Length: 210
Image (cartoon, rainbow, N blue to C red; front, side, top):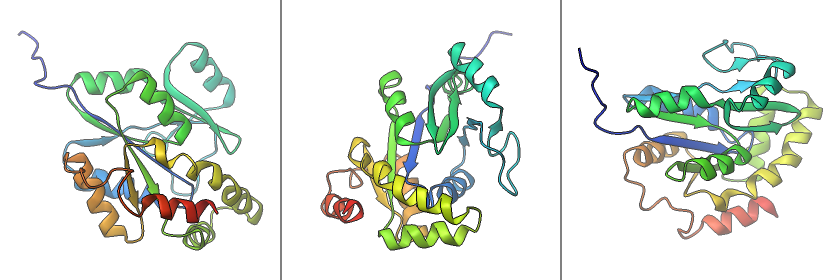
């Protein structure tokens, strides 16, 4: 039987945010709500957190394995975040897009920059918190990190937040359902009003970086 060529190439959506913005919760809810949208599982050298499952949340590998994969050019993007390495497998993404499947990546600003260089048609989204107080409250409320780690994440969030303007779309997670709805509209191609240049976004970003 002859193979069937997919009617269209799949789309790649990238979501980035500072730690504690609620990105992971939004990503999981978005994948559950949008038919046909698949979460692309990244590789990482950090140990699993409680309730995380190999192959569902991440591919957990040691540093030597990760570095060998880098040497073989097996990642579309990779970056060091909080002393751990993260990367997106090239073969998995390319096969899914060629088959017409839509993929969602949850990565940091460094990885997003690499993907833009390799895949110019990627749709990238940055999620902002409504305030620094909300960001800190969420980090402390997770109960998964030590006080030292939380302090470092808050400090490093300034660098992460400083890259918001590089992303095509920007949303604010001040209300979970509203933010989720904004992400759904982006996936549906209805995001004309969610661009980085819309009124109020630059002012909010400046307050977060102050």
